[in-house]
Length: 187
Image (cartoon, rainbow, N blue to C red):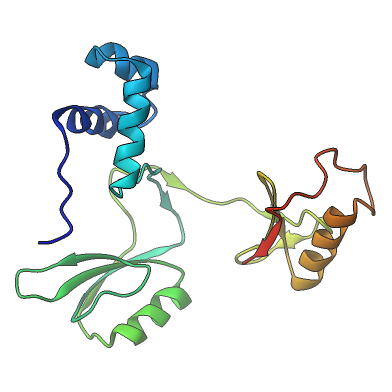
């Protein structure tokens, strides 16, 4: 195993606390461990640099999770190396997304899960286009501007919203933040 990071005793203790409650504040961690908040900030930065991700866990109703045994890991999938050298690949998404990944893996051995036990279940309510107000079917097209994220239903709305945000013209009031250098459009 080559991708193993060594953790200091303090880093390991911080991870243990965060595993129990990932919303534990730096102040509380510092108090519990008897160190300063600055030390906790350095530890959190070190953990991020070592590839530790602080995530939110939930199960989205209507999505599938598939566990496939394959000879290679699929890009963007969660993978575990098995004792025989193969991989257990975990794929989550819509039926179409799962089928696409499975076709690339060329595996015949897979297991389909329909629900994650013991996890919070969520269902996305209807999402509305930030440009036209119409309901978004499927995955939204995204427009980013600074720290704000806008969702659109189609390429036309995406283009028009991006144009409106750049120029500050169009319906509604002008955004006081103005167009920023990190403005972007994505899927």
